[in-house]
Image 1 (cartoon, rainbow, N blue to C red):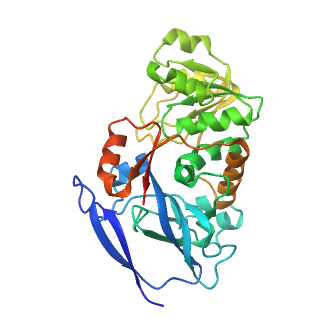
Image 2 (image 1 turned 45 degrees about the vertical axis):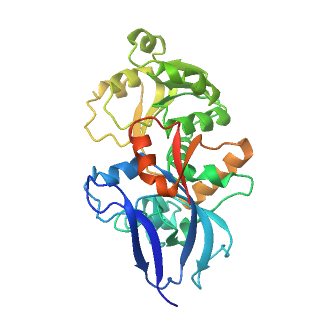
Image 3 (image 1 turned 90 degrees about the vertical axis):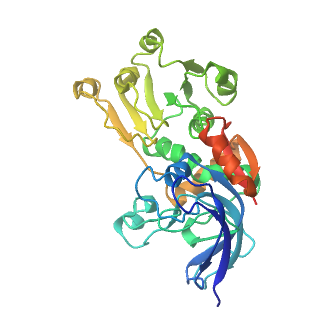
Length: 337
């Protein structure tokens, strides 16, 4: 078996534009899969890595972790896949398969999990490689051109619904109606919940209702926040900025949960008594396991759920990144090879 040349788009140092870049992959491993990239979404986490916001970027970097593609080669010990299968690949590309977390089915919590764009190259390319377990088969009824964001944005907001055991009778809230939040609205509406969207952008109101919100609350309106006090069983925060967290905790019903999937970097000043009196909880989660990805895709196929996307050619990657960075994306950006 020979090495392979990958043609990609990379940022070579912070502050620069992405430019054409090639690198070599070694011969494929026994349990690895090579995927021809057809589409790749752009996530805010790609922007964070491009800008080294988290301090773990290695340049040159090929971003991209919302990948949809076709299996073109398999290692000899790959399970459940064949050449030609359409698959998705998200933030995680391998896990150890032997630690307690992996053996419990929580591969996304593996302490040695391989991240698709951390210390390796991602999907702004013609090909990407991963462990077979993280190449998730895509149901035939799902539109490949729109499915990419499900493998990061989608599973990020689907996981909490499962882990917190959100009931279809629940009253729920979603903070931030962007790339993550718009998918949360679609999932929670189809789950059966009564959904409140927290949004300060009045121009999005009709779109927000079409995506699944029964109610819209401007969190900057103190009177509106008082009116929903003690009413929500579950609130999902998809933003990465500091907010008045105590006002959201007050909006929770007894035994309610405020759950974070947005990467808020600042500490959250929350008094213990605001939690103790109503047995309220604060929690957070990363994406989800391979099995949960499959469950999410089955749910999407059953309820005809797909991200709302804008498509750019791969060669216009810098325009696409600027479009997302400027806040103009409605609601997820996808690159097409």
